[in-house]
Image (cartoon, rainbow, N blue to C red; front, top):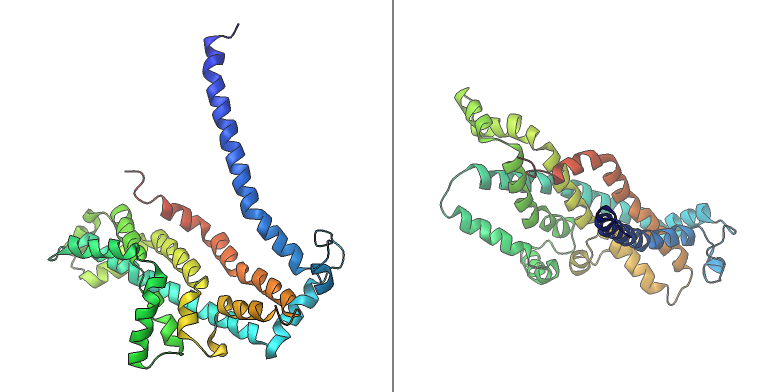
Amino acid sequence: MSTPHSTMLRPRVLGRATVNVVVAVSVLYTLLPVAWLVLAASKSRDALFSSSILSFRDFSLVQNVRDLFAMDGGLYGRWYGNSLLYAVLGAALGALISVACGYAFDKYHFRHKEKLFGLVLAAVMVPQTVLALPLYLIASETGVVNTFWSVFIPVLFNPFGVYLGRIFAQGYVPDEVLEAARVDGAGELTTYLRVSLRMLGPGLVTVFLFQLTAIWNNFFLPMVMLSDQDLYPVSLGLFQWNSQATVSPEYYPVVITGSLLAVLPLVLAFAFLQRFWRSGLTAGAVK
Protein backbone atom coordinates (compact mmCIF):
# COMPACT_ATOMS: atom_id res chain seq x y z
CA MET A 1 0.00 0.00 0.00
CA SER A 2 1.50 3.34 -1.03
CA THR A 3 1.86 6.04 1.55
CA PRO A 4 0.95 9.71 0.96
CA HIS A 5 4.65 10.55 1.15
CA SER A 6 5.55 8.12 -1.66
CA THR A 7 2.61 9.39 -3.72
CA MET A 8 3.96 12.96 -3.44
CA LEU A 9 7.50 11.87 -4.32
CA ARG A 10 6.47 9.99 -7.47
CA PRO A 11 5.61 13.11 -9.56
CA ARG A 12 8.87 14.73 -8.43
CA VAL A 13 10.91 11.72 -9.52
CA LEU A 14 9.09 11.51 -12.86
CA GLY A 15 9.50 15.23 -13.42
CA ARG A 16 13.21 15.08 -12.61
CA ALA A 17 13.69 12.09 -14.89
CA THR A 18 11.90 13.90 -17.71
CA VAL A 19 14.09 16.96 -17.26
CA ASN A 20 17.24 14.80 -17.26
CA VAL A 21 16.16 13.07 -20.48
CA VAL A 22 15.44 16.40 -22.18
CA VAL A 23 18.82 17.79 -21.06
CA ALA A 24 20.63 14.63 -22.24
CA VAL A 25 18.97 14.78 -25.66
CA SER A 26 19.81 18.49 -25.96
CA VAL A 27 23.45 17.84 -25.06
CA LEU A 28 23.70 15.03 -27.62
CA TYR A 29 22.04 17.20 -30.25
CA THR A 30 24.62 19.92 -29.57
CA LEU A 31 27.76 17.83 -29.15
CA LEU A 32 27.35 15.13 -31.81
CA PRO A 33 27.90 17.52 -34.77
CA VAL A 34 30.95 18.95 -32.98
CA ALA A 35 32.30 15.44 -32.36
CA TRP A 36 31.77 14.56 -36.02
CA LEU A 37 33.54 17.77 -37.07
CA VAL A 38 36.54 16.98 -34.87
CA LEU A 39 36.79 13.42 -36.20
CA ALA A 40 36.28 14.46 -39.82
CA ALA A 41 38.92 17.20 -39.57
CA SER A 42 41.47 14.59 -38.47
CA LYS A 43 40.94 12.33 -41.52
CA SER A 44 42.54 12.29 -44.91
CA ARG A 45 40.39 12.76 -47.99
CA ASP A 46 40.21 9.02 -48.70
CA ALA A 47 39.21 8.21 -45.12
CA LEU A 48 36.69 11.04 -45.17
CA PHE A 49 34.65 9.36 -47.90
CA SER A 50 34.96 5.87 -46.41
CA SER A 51 33.19 4.25 -43.48
CA SER A 52 36.20 4.65 -41.17
CA ILE A 53 35.52 8.24 -40.20
CA LEU A 54 34.63 7.22 -36.63
CA SER A 55 37.84 5.28 -36.16
CA PHE A 56 41.03 6.75 -34.71
CA ARG A 57 43.21 5.56 -37.59
CA ASP A 58 44.51 7.69 -40.45
CA PHE A 59 45.11 10.72 -38.21
CA SER A 60 45.84 13.62 -40.58
CA LEU A 61 44.86 16.73 -38.63
CA VAL A 62 48.30 18.32 -38.81
CA GLN A 63 48.52 17.73 -42.55
CA ASN A 64 44.99 19.04 -43.06
CA VAL A 65 45.87 22.23 -41.19
CA ARG A 66 48.95 22.68 -43.37
CA ASP A 67 46.90 22.12 -46.52
CA LEU A 68 44.29 24.55 -45.23
CA PHE A 69 46.70 27.45 -44.82
CA ALA A 70 48.48 26.60 -48.09
CA MET A 71 45.32 26.37 -50.22
CA ASP A 72 44.92 29.16 -52.82
CA GLY A 73 48.02 31.00 -51.66
CA GLY A 74 47.06 31.11 -47.98
CA LEU A 75 43.65 32.75 -48.42
CA TYR A 76 42.25 31.11 -45.29
CA GLY A 77 44.72 32.95 -43.04
CA ARG A 78 43.62 36.24 -44.56
CA TRP A 79 39.96 35.34 -44.14
CA TYR A 80 40.59 34.41 -40.53
CA GLY A 81 42.30 37.74 -39.88
CA ASN A 82 39.41 39.57 -41.55
CA SER A 83 36.88 37.79 -39.34
CA LEU A 84 38.86 38.60 -36.20
CA LEU A 85 39.02 42.26 -37.24
CA TYR A 86 35.33 42.45 -38.15
CA ALA A 87 34.16 40.54 -35.08
CA VAL A 88 36.47 41.58 -32.24
CA LEU A 89 36.79 45.26 -33.12
CA GLY A 90 33.18 45.50 -34.28
CA ALA A 91 31.86 43.76 -31.16
CA ALA A 92 33.95 45.96 -28.85
CA LEU A 93 32.86 49.23 -30.46
CA GLY A 94 29.30 47.98 -30.94
CA ALA A 95 29.02 46.98 -27.28
CA LEU A 96 30.24 50.41 -26.17
CA ILE A 97 27.72 52.13 -28.45
CA SER A 98 24.84 49.86 -27.42
CA VAL A 99 25.49 50.18 -23.69
CA ALA A 100 25.87 53.97 -23.95
CA CYS A 101 22.56 54.25 -25.83
CA GLY A 102 20.80 51.97 -23.35
CA TYR A 103 22.22 53.98 -20.47
CA ALA A 104 20.92 57.20 -22.02
CA PHE A 105 17.45 55.69 -22.49
CA ASP A 106 17.34 54.64 -18.85
CA LYS A 107 18.94 57.56 -17.00
CA TYR A 108 17.97 60.63 -19.01
CA HIS A 109 14.62 62.22 -19.79
CA PHE A 110 13.99 63.71 -23.21
CA ARG A 111 11.07 64.19 -25.54
CA HIS A 112 9.53 61.09 -27.09
CA LYS A 113 11.95 58.83 -25.25
CA GLU A 114 9.59 55.88 -24.99
CA LYS A 115 8.47 56.26 -28.59
CA LEU A 116 12.07 56.16 -29.77
CA PHE A 117 12.73 53.15 -27.58
CA GLY A 118 9.66 51.53 -29.12
CA LEU A 119 11.31 51.97 -32.52
CA VAL A 120 14.41 50.25 -31.13
CA LEU A 121 12.27 47.31 -29.98
CA ALA A 122 10.57 47.19 -33.38
CA ALA A 123 13.99 47.12 -35.08
CA VAL A 124 14.92 44.07 -32.99
CA MET A 125 12.23 42.09 -34.81
CA VAL A 126 13.48 43.04 -38.29
CA PRO A 127 15.59 40.23 -39.81
CA GLN A 128 19.08 41.27 -40.84
CA THR A 129 18.59 39.78 -44.30
CA VAL A 130 15.81 42.31 -44.94
CA LEU A 131 18.26 45.16 -44.30
CA ALA A 132 20.99 43.83 -46.59
CA LEU A 133 19.60 45.35 -49.80
CA PRO A 134 18.94 48.83 -48.33
CA LEU A 135 22.40 48.80 -46.78
CA TYR A 136 23.88 47.84 -50.14
CA LEU A 137 22.10 50.74 -51.86
CA ILE A 138 23.35 53.15 -49.19
CA ALA A 139 26.89 51.79 -49.50
CA SER A 140 26.67 52.07 -53.28
CA GLU A 141 25.63 55.73 -53.07
CA THR A 142 28.51 56.51 -50.70
CA GLY A 143 31.04 54.52 -52.74
CA VAL A 144 32.08 52.03 -50.06
CA VAL A 145 30.82 48.83 -51.70
CA ASN A 146 33.48 46.10 -51.75
CA THR A 147 35.48 47.77 -48.99
CA PHE A 148 36.16 46.95 -45.34
CA TRP A 149 33.77 49.70 -44.22
CA SER A 150 30.76 48.29 -46.07
CA VAL A 151 30.76 45.29 -43.71
CA PHE A 152 32.24 46.89 -40.59
CA ILE A 153 30.03 49.97 -40.13
CA PRO A 154 26.60 48.23 -40.22
CA VAL A 155 27.57 45.75 -37.47
CA LEU A 156 28.34 48.57 -35.03
CA PHE A 157 24.66 49.31 -34.45
CA ASN A 158 22.55 46.60 -32.86
CA PRO A 159 19.02 47.35 -31.56
CA PHE A 160 19.03 44.26 -29.35
CA GLY A 161 22.26 45.49 -27.76
CA VAL A 162 20.60 48.83 -26.99
CA TYR A 163 17.71 46.99 -25.34
CA LEU A 164 20.13 44.94 -23.25
CA GLY A 165 22.07 48.10 -22.39
CA ARG A 166 18.96 49.67 -20.90
CA ILE A 167 18.20 46.53 -18.88
CA PHE A 168 21.77 46.45 -17.54
CA ALA A 169 21.64 50.15 -16.66
CA GLN A 170 18.46 49.57 -14.67
CA GLY A 171 19.96 46.61 -12.83
CA TYR A 172 23.52 47.79 -12.20
CA VAL A 173 23.53 51.58 -11.90
CA PRO A 174 21.42 52.98 -9.02
CA ASP A 175 20.14 56.51 -9.48
CA GLU A 176 21.45 57.38 -6.00
CA VAL A 177 25.03 56.77 -7.14
CA LEU A 178 24.59 59.16 -10.05
CA GLU A 179 23.07 61.82 -7.81
CA ALA A 180 26.00 61.49 -5.40
CA ALA A 181 28.48 61.91 -8.27
CA ARG A 182 26.66 65.01 -9.49
CA VAL A 183 26.61 66.50 -5.98
CA ASP A 184 30.39 65.99 -5.87
CA GLY A 185 30.67 68.11 -9.00
CA ALA A 186 31.25 65.40 -11.63
CA GLY A 187 29.94 66.13 -15.11
CA GLU A 188 27.72 63.74 -17.02
CA LEU A 189 30.51 62.35 -19.21
CA THR A 190 32.85 61.95 -16.24
CA THR A 191 30.10 60.21 -14.25
CA TYR A 192 29.45 57.81 -17.09
CA LEU A 193 33.10 56.97 -17.81
CA ARG A 194 34.39 56.76 -14.24
CA VAL A 195 31.35 55.49 -12.35
CA SER A 196 28.63 54.01 -14.52
CA LEU A 197 30.82 52.24 -17.09
CA ARG A 198 32.69 50.36 -14.38
CA MET A 199 29.43 49.20 -12.85
CA LEU A 200 28.20 48.16 -16.29
CA GLY A 201 31.22 45.89 -16.84
CA PRO A 202 29.36 42.54 -16.73
CA GLY A 203 26.64 43.89 -18.97
CA LEU A 204 29.22 45.25 -21.39
CA VAL A 205 30.87 41.82 -21.63
CA THR A 206 27.50 40.16 -22.21
CA VAL A 207 26.62 42.51 -25.06
CA PHE A 208 30.14 42.01 -26.45
CA LEU A 209 29.67 38.23 -26.55
CA PHE A 210 26.32 38.50 -28.29
CA GLN A 211 27.79 40.95 -30.80
CA LEU A 212 30.88 38.79 -31.32
CA THR A 213 28.80 35.72 -32.09
CA ALA A 214 26.49 37.59 -34.47
CA ILE A 215 29.33 39.27 -36.39
CA TRP A 216 31.50 36.15 -36.54
CA ASN A 217 28.61 34.14 -38.03
CA ASN A 218 27.54 37.00 -40.32
CA PHE A 219 27.24 35.68 -43.85
CA PHE A 220 24.59 37.40 -45.93
CA LEU A 221 25.84 40.98 -45.54
CA PRO A 222 29.43 40.19 -46.65
CA MET A 223 28.07 38.14 -49.54
CA VAL A 224 26.04 41.13 -50.74
CA MET A 225 28.72 43.76 -50.12
CA LEU A 226 31.98 42.06 -51.11
CA SER A 227 33.38 40.72 -54.36
CA ASP A 228 37.07 40.88 -53.46
CA GLN A 229 38.18 37.54 -51.97
CA ASP A 230 40.85 39.26 -49.88
CA LEU A 231 38.08 40.97 -47.87
CA TYR A 232 36.01 37.84 -47.22
CA PRO A 233 35.35 36.67 -43.66
CA VAL A 234 35.78 32.99 -42.82
CA SER A 235 32.08 32.17 -43.22
CA LEU A 236 31.90 33.49 -46.79
CA GLY A 237 35.28 32.06 -47.75
CA LEU A 238 34.38 28.56 -46.58
CA PHE A 239 31.07 28.81 -48.45
CA GLN A 240 32.96 29.60 -51.64
CA TRP A 241 35.34 26.67 -51.13
CA ASN A 242 32.46 24.35 -50.36
CA SER A 243 30.81 25.36 -53.64
CA GLN A 244 34.02 24.53 -55.48
CA ALA A 245 34.32 21.16 -53.71
CA THR A 246 31.61 19.65 -55.93
CA VAL A 247 34.02 20.03 -58.84
CA SER A 248 37.35 19.77 -56.96
CA PRO A 249 37.06 17.21 -54.11
CA GLU A 250 40.39 18.32 -52.62
CA TYR A 251 38.50 21.24 -51.06
CA TYR A 252 36.41 18.99 -48.80
CA PRO A 253 39.11 18.29 -46.15
CA VAL A 254 40.17 21.94 -45.97
CA VAL A 255 36.55 23.12 -45.66
CA ILE A 256 35.96 20.75 -42.74
CA THR A 257 39.25 21.67 -41.04
CA GLY A 258 38.57 25.35 -41.63
CA SER A 259 35.12 24.98 -40.08
CA LEU A 260 36.67 23.41 -36.99
CA LEU A 261 39.17 26.25 -36.59
CA ALA A 262 36.41 28.80 -37.18
CA VAL A 263 34.59 27.59 -34.05
CA LEU A 264 37.59 28.08 -31.74
CA PRO A 265 37.42 31.90 -31.22
CA LEU A 266 33.82 31.74 -30.02
CA VAL A 267 34.56 28.81 -27.70
CA LEU A 268 37.57 30.62 -26.21
CA ALA A 269 35.65 33.87 -25.83
CA PHE A 270 32.81 32.21 -23.92
CA ALA A 271 35.26 30.15 -21.84
CA PHE A 272 37.37 33.12 -20.71
CA LEU A 273 34.46 35.57 -20.25
CA GLN A 274 31.83 33.23 -18.84
CA ARG A 275 32.17 34.64 -15.31
CA PHE A 276 31.14 38.11 -16.51
CA TRP A 277 28.59 36.66 -18.92
CA ARG A 278 26.75 34.70 -16.21
CA SER A 279 26.55 37.68 -13.90
CA GLY A 280 25.40 39.85 -16.79
CA LEU A 281 22.55 37.50 -17.65
CA THR A 282 21.17 37.82 -14.10
CA ALA A 283 21.13 41.63 -14.15
CA GLY A 284 17.98 42.90 -12.49
CA ALA A 285 16.84 39.40 -11.53
CA VAL A 286 17.28 40.06 -7.79
CA LYS A 287 16.16 43.30 -6.25
